[in-house]
Amino acid sequence: MIKENLKKVKSTIPEGVRLIAVSKTKPVEDLQEAYDAGQRVFGENKALEMRDKHAVLPKDIEWHFIGHLQTNKVKYIAPFVSQIHSIDSMEVLKVVEKEAAKNNRVIDCLLQFHIATEETKFGLDMQEAEEILACVGTLPHVRIVGVMGMATNTDNMAQVRAEFHTLKGIYNTLKDKYFADKPEFKEVSMGMSGDYPIAIEEGSTEVRVGSAIFGERNYAKVND
Image 1 (cartoon, one colour):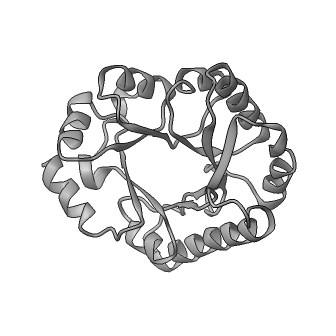
Image 2: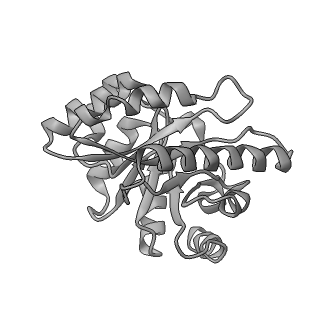
């Protein structure tokens, strides 16, 4: 089913939008099946789980960390992670800088913004983001390449669309003010299995799709 699901999802995603297969809680066999069907970009939200999967799966996989990143877990993914979607504080970014330097790498990062009505979701506001951007020049081993946000978990698609529209507006503001001459600042990571078509319409460049590819998750298997 994974191969068929992947083909179906890919058929709905236009050129220029990257599909991140969200494989959290899924066994390596499922990831291998998606890999064999041509998928190369995978998203995980637990550092130790991602480290363990990276160790046994093909080395040309591009790993994206999409969950809330604890500072004491950065060291486990810094040697190989391609992109961290969830920079939600200066504290986290400084630890990413430190661990990237240890590994002689520059790690691409997205600033996560709080666009939902749910207080439980993580993310920056514009003032916090600008405080980070004022200091980012002193962090040579991280590269800010865009923004990320999670919409409210609701059936109200008008609200979801408005929240995605807000995030694209934030991206545009930051691009104009801080990154006008930085072509690498080009990513808007938004949209999941239930709402990614709307996210694409609102300007998403990276969609994080899990259950539509792998089926429902087994949270009992999560360990971090």
